[in-house]
Amino acid sequence: MGIQVEFNPDLALRNYSEFENGNRKLEECVPRELIVGQIYNFLKKGQRNFWLEGEIPLVETKGNQELSRPLASIVILEANHFILGDEIYTSGKYRAEEVFEKNDKDIHFDGFARVK
Image (tube, rainbow, N blue to C red; front, side, top):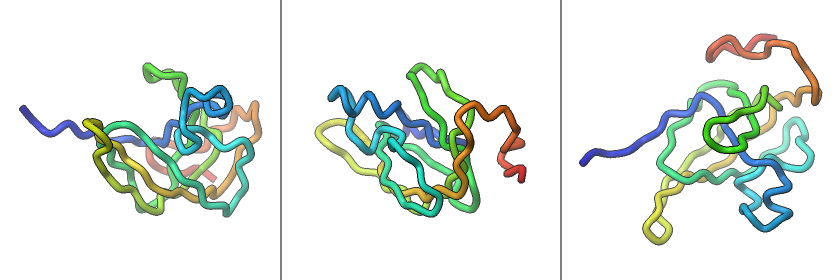
C-alpha cells in the first residue's frame, strides 16, 4: 500500500451547471463569471499537489480527463488536504490573473511557462 497523490499542472473544475443541478458543490465548479483579481475557493476529491510559484491554467472538466482549453490563468494561493468521512479532499483558494475569451484559440501556456 502506498500514498496516492496526484500532481496537477492545472486546476480542472466542473461546469457551473453541475452546481445549479445539485450534482456538485459550488467550489467544485468554474464560477459563473470569472473576474480578474478575484479570489475563489476550490474543492477537489483526492490528495492533489499544485504548483504554487506561478500561473497555471483553469480548465473545465467533464470527467475522465476530458478537459477544455484554458479558461483563465490563475495562481493557487493555498491548498489544504483533509479527510471527510472516508474520502480525502484538497481545498484551497486561487486568484484569477487573466480571463480568456470563450472561443480563444491563442496559446497561453507552453508547458508550465505562461505565454504573454
